Image 1 (cartoon, rainbow, N blue to C red):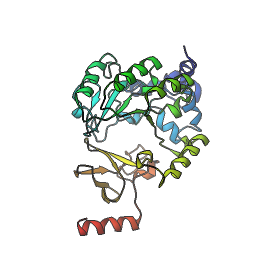
Image 2 (tube, rainbow, N blue to C red):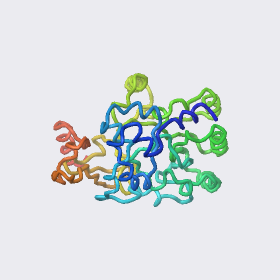
Image 3 (cartoon, rainbow, N blue to C red):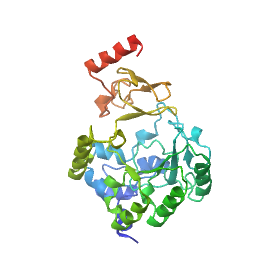
Length: 325
């Protein structure tokens, strides 16, 4: 067993362990069992270290609650990934790129996961159905960019990852390989010298990661973001990330830029995707609690920050719509 696998086992993966760490007066094991059974829990030591107190933003990301079983609106596959899935483990939405699910598990499970209908279940992200995925990618010469996801691809062994890289690099029209992973903040020990030595043979390989709250920004992360800031104007936009909305219903990722956004209100964000199709993203609302709060109260009162825009930017957007540009 490698060091990172040993560290993984030191995390919290049962409600009993969670209660022992934070107190049985805080964690009601019996009450939380339905939420735990609905979507498993695991919190690595690195993720646990980010939790400063019960109920803080990092706690809310990883600790199950009974409220997550109360479905107010939405659909199970909110991004309609299955609708664009021609073969198991592949989603082909954009013309020149494809999503390839290669791992069913994560180091730490985020309670907000939009793929929780599959993540954690090896039968729904099967490791024995790679062949049909490779065949599909080889047959579609328009695909030049493949994003490995899951679950977290970095939970696979170096041997299995190398097998995937070898198969993809054997397809001439695939130029870019990306790994979608939160391992850098959840299990940084997974980035071993052995992995780095292996992956360099298959470059260009990029790792996409994300942070959901400033508390996740360690000194090393902040230093990396300063590098990204310094890249603007000096390198290709490919190397500079943008804040995007994942459009509901399979519209794809849309950057929050004036040429895409039509209107932002307290209730919704109206925008068009790369195909010019119009989508509406509903602003988050908090669910009515036992305290009798207004169910339509803005979510910002419940530590959920809605998308906002300044008056200047909003007026500029309206002027563009009036001129038809």
